[in-house]
Length: 291
Image 1 (cartoon, rainbow, N blue to C red):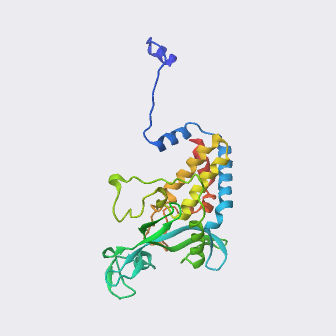
Image 2: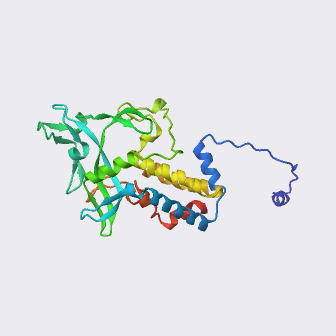
Image 3: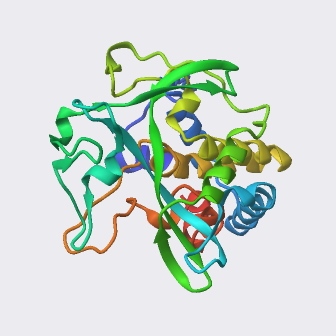
C-alpha cells in the first residue's frame, strides 16, 4: 500500500482499520474458515484416506452385497421407489414395477394394475404411506412408503445390477437398528413456506432426508473426525459435507438417458456408499487443501 501511494503521488493519513465481517450462513462461515486456513495437501490426503478406512472397517458390512453369481461385492448405489395405490382395487404397486421399462430403458406414464387389470395413469394413483417406528426418535411416524427396487454394485467381475434379495433387506434392517453415534443430529426441520403436503410427508426431522443406512454412514464419518487432530477436523468435515448433499440423501434422483441400458444415479461411483467413498480419486482429496 505504501508503494502504491508513492506511485500515485498521494499522501494518505495512515492508521488502523477496524473491519467487522459477518456471514449470515452457518455453512458459508464454515466453508470460508476452512478454505482460508489450508493445510498441507499430503497431510490432508493421508488423513482423508485414514478416515475412510476407519469408516469402512466400522461400517463396511452395511454396503456389502452379493453379485448375481453369488460372489461378495459392494453396493455402488441403490434405487428406492415410491409405492402407488390403485384407485380401483387399492392394490399397492411400486412405481418401479409400474413405470420402468427396459430395452430401451424408459419411464412410462401408464400401466396395468396386476390385481384388477385396470389400465391406470401413474399420476392418477395416490402414493402409499406407512406408519413405522423411528428408532432415533423412539416414536411411531407416518411417512411416504418406499421400497428397495434395484441394487447396483461392483465385485471382481465388474459392475452389475439386480433386484434386491432377502439378504439385502436383512442387511438394511440391521443398519436401521444400529445405534447411531452420539453426535448424530436429532433436530426438527422448520419448513415454513417450503413445506409441500404429500411431497414432504413424514419429513419432520433432519434424518428423514436420508435412508437410515446412509444417515448411519454419514453420522459415523462425522463422529470419526473427532479422532483426528484439531487442525484437521474441519477440513475432513468439509470433505464429508461436499459429498453429503448431492450423493447421500433422498434428494438424489435417478437419471434416464436416451440409448442407455440402465437407470443410474447422477454420480453412481460415489453415491450411497462409504465403501465407494473410500475410492475417491486422489485429485478429489487434494482439492480441498489446495484451494
